[in-house]
Length: 220
Image (cartoon, rainbow, N blue to C red; front, top):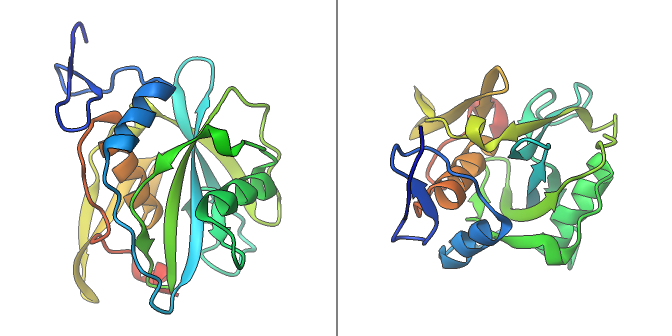
């Protein structure tokens, strides 16, 4: 039973004595992100992309929207992903994340709902992903674009509060990160971004994830 909460001195967000997740408000998450010094990654020939780390209220608890990519997608079909994609020429990461979320799920959140950004993540396939944390709150049921999205899920904060699994592969010295979620294992880059959100926004720990490896199938 979680009975008392103490502030985490690193990012100033509440933390329960047993280390679990305490209820998070829009203000507390925004404060944690404002205190977090994000690491930007130069493009250096890579293409800019953005994803929406979209916080929703399912009536009982807050959580994040997670999609399963359509089996007909050319790249990483059937894999778990955050709403997002490549940024258009001259488009900011925030604008790209919000546009992609509307195109994929029919959800129109506004720029004033953006709480902050997490670290950029450079992918093996040649992108630099900027995670945009946006507070969507109570939403109408998403209307997924069937050409891109097979299903939409809400990962509650309590479910997101899991320890990652690390595996080794002969192709890289870096550990491959996986998260046990939605009855499956979610792989990087999505797993790395979700893990950093958990660490920074839910526990107030300024954790870096750019060094975590992706599975070989995601290198294409």
